[in-house]
Length: 162
Image (cartoon, rainbow, N blue to C red; front, top):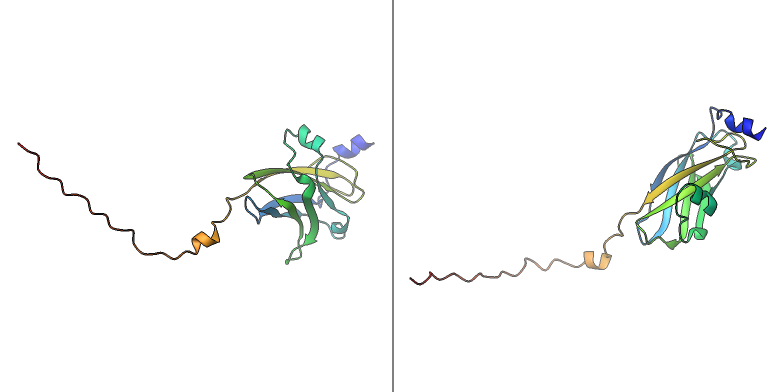
């Protein structure tokens, strides 16, 4: 019976994971937001989003991120009223990218396949989060310009002797 449910097409209005916006840089704690698409009325309260297990990472050929235990995921609504997932890490991310494998579960939490979830399935999506170089040191950037570089006068060459 579980197999037959996995083969059924996803409902027309099934929640799915959308685009990811990164709001932090390398060397800072991760701050990102993922859009949740096609969330049906009343479905948002029953959704959960979590980092996949180390076994799921291995099965996907990905490396489980160091410090992943400190990743906090909160489902919320943004200022426009749309469903989003807010991701934050407790520790700074030292690498310039991190692979996230996320599992979105519908109400009931049973596992399934596909790119979207219905009433009780789970969908898994991988994201490669690229982190920009950290901003320049504000103390260095704030130093005033002292003017033009010093002028160095080149020696005038003398004519060669005959």
